[in-house]
Length: 173
Image (cartoon, rainbow, N blue to C red):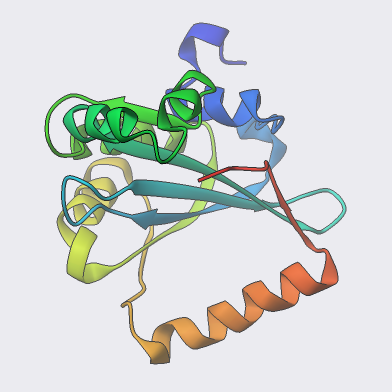
């Protein structure tokens, strides 16, 4: 069994949020990746799996660039500094999100989980997704941000919410 030191940052984050994930538990995990298009946008990764009760559990990890973080903290319109202290966001150095950090976290997580697919927008994340597949064997699924591709999944999400079949960790972001 992996030691605590061997846990990836993503796996530690999930464990902190109450989700104990073990590589050998056979649980399938699907990832959704939304990369920031500019320095002031969020980058987020959603980790989705089924609970023992059959519900969908979704937990997110968010990334934000340091320079923009400092601007937002000074503005005071959102509690961004509190979110960072509470572990809701990872602040990366520079003016734009460090996608190498996102890649490293997903790659490390892939060593601990049975990833079924990384779902991503090919217009925004094709290069990063391809590296994750080529270098770490992560299966990919393109999800273009169009009505045709998002309508069905949005209806599925609505059904999960209305039926109480979606669990999440109270993520404020």
